[in-house]
Length: 197
Image (cartoon, rainbow, N blue to C red):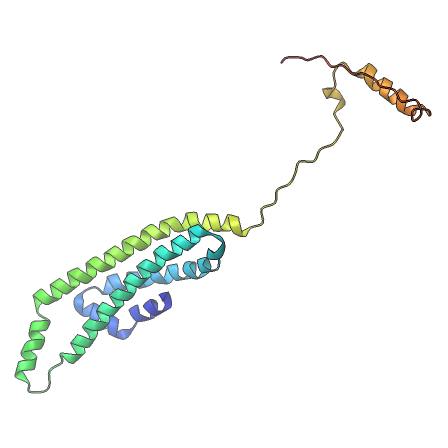
């Protein structure tokens, strides 16, 4: 849909009618905005299956794109009306109708109407674009592999952290070095003293 709108906004017929009604600059800006957002939409569509926030963001964007599509229909309608209203040579009545159709009041009314629609669409696109940074951030986190490294445990304790256990340590070492420790099992009580910092 975005591709269709970009193509439509850039068509010669739309540019001609936009120039006639004085909204050429607005149409050009809208074309550029949708063109910029198009790549984001295509990229986000690949991620929406795994992220509901991306899906919601796409729905909002598509809704505004549909409004832009309706805007294109309005311009197409005006283009057709303009073409069908061209007078035949020597047809005084048709010439008068064309002059009435393109009178200042009609031009002003249409320009105001279309200008308002374009501004509303651009405003919504700006709001969606601001949310895009957050959505993309969430998407990037989910697309990456989150590695949870479990803290490795071991029985080694730095010697400087052991206080008042030197005699117990030596007794355990002596027991392990004795050859008969498997037959005569002994229990060595190790009582620690609770300290308060």
